[in-house]
Length: 228
Image (cartoon, helix red, strand yellow):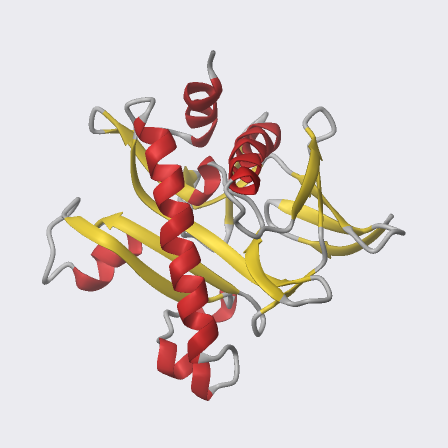
């Protein structure tokens, strides 16, 4: 295996067969020791976070496979905290796509003059550039198209997939009495045919979820979701 990228929460290795291996870490994003899925720095290390994120990601990726939704997922090894994935080309230097059901986090900080904390949102889709130096700035469909990052047609595909996948996650959480406030996805062009599909992970570290009005930490979310 050859290390091709050392990320904040996982490392990426190239395999001889052309696929890739994601090694999940126990590091999570946040600031000043407080977890924040929208942060672009590692805020803290939580023992077991890597395997927990992989378990939940595997659960959702298998579900998406059953629904025929394109992703980079091939299989996972929970004990080794690794996931094998198809090669994927990111858009530009990478995009993050957020689906918001309630006004919290950076959405509330930006638009607080017009919304109240926790105000319901109608599966609002927001795209940001992965750019730590510029604090992951939001970008519009028109700008993405003009800058050659993705076309308007590709934007509509990503928006549709985002809302579809978020709705599946929201539905599964609701079965456990958990409400999804927002979730962050990444997409890429998969393999030789360049089909747009979901990449990265689908874990507690990528979402804000609440139960009875109380925020659920990523490890607790995994335990609640996968308990028998």
